[in-house]
Image (cartoon, rainbow, N blue to C red; front, side):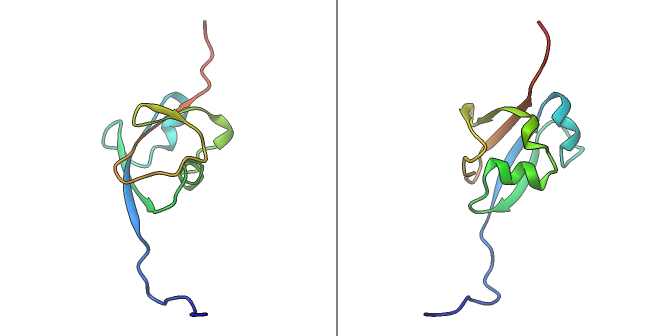
Length: 90
């Protein structure tokens, strides 16, 4: 069985990310409401949240390309991810 390849580049993708309300403080950029983030292929929404120190238990709704999904959804090149916290009110 062949061993691991050394110096093999890790495949990456770039996604757009928007964080709302109390999650906005975890936004990894300061230049507007949407950030562009580069992550390894195979990254899930949960992985992305953890990488940004977003407490996953505070994420209430996830949209990818305007469709609802869950924390285990694997991201793809060019995805537009929106994370919402639980919002109280009436």
